[in-house]
Image (cartoon, rainbow, N blue to C red; front, side, top):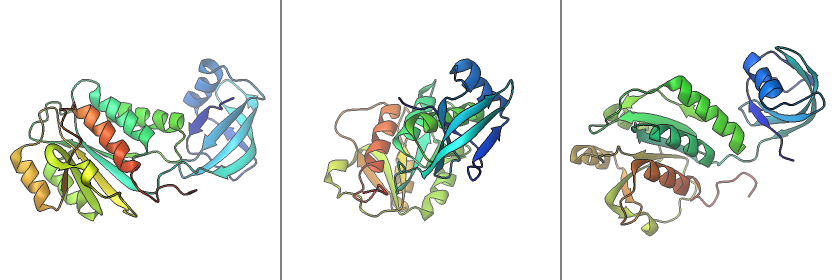
Length: 242
């Protein structure tokens, strides 16, 4: 039976733990209908996890007994940062959710020349990131940055070991060697209308690799999800236990 996972500011050093987070207690008690004696998994967002048994479930707090402590082994070693233009409707929320499930470490919403939607509800996105991290078995919660302009994002990306901007006229991804022992990798995806020529020149001037995902024209959200997955899972030495 799969146990429910919760990521929070938990002190997993003690053998017993009292939790006073009303929202979490309400979810466990009234949404998931868990009861005294049920097992759950608690994670502190820093790779530390524990299997815990509910020993007391009150109105707005609960107590658990730690049964087993261990380290999360699911995180990719590569530090992949998704720089994605803010997309229309719920498409950006979809990208944030799926990129989190895939294993991205940071998400940077960016405003480009052809970006249409300019505002985001960061509180809603942070909730999506946390829930996706819990559901997918992540050991950490990806960092969600504030919205930044394209040029500002270029400056922030200078410390990355590799930056890959995805654009259809670019070099075929299949022609690249596998990413071996590369630390910080930036994945750049433009808006629905694509990158401008000036943005492409700026990226090339910053030594970005311009990459395509094939001959078909993909929607921006499809490109973001696909590109992130390929980069996260394209390193020979990505998993701690391999």
